[in-house]
Length: 173
Image (cartoon, rainbow, N blue to C red):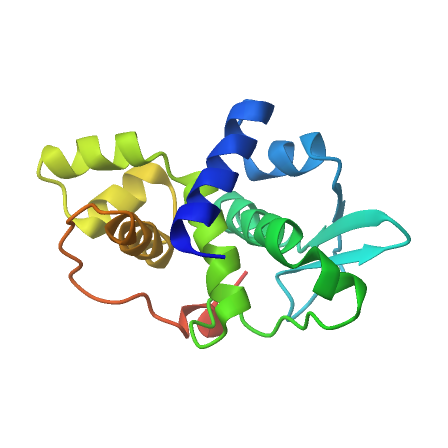
């Protein structure tokens, strides 16, 4: 799906369900969200089996990361449900920018968690990318994806650097 389609579909979900909280959004969409405390190296996963949409999340992470992982898995539900039902969807890295499916899921995630009007207002006030990410309570890489996607929609933000495709490798929780 193209950037405009992802943006439109995600914003329609947010408006329909009235929330940007990824866990509440998933549950409102009819996705069953489970905590999986036995996850050691896995942050989360999505599957679609027997007409049940399921997200499993590692509860051993901080709230910010928990919400980011859930938003990412919502992206897979929105865009890759058929593949998940066919055992085709394999998740290795949350921010693997070399995988189109992972990037698309992250674009959905960025649109869920980051209100572009709030983001733009912070930029207008002179805050830099790291400060805006901290104020929005998202990882800087997710904010960079949001900015990239908004540029694809016709905005003209200067991006100081590209999202780090490897940043989750060192995630400690």
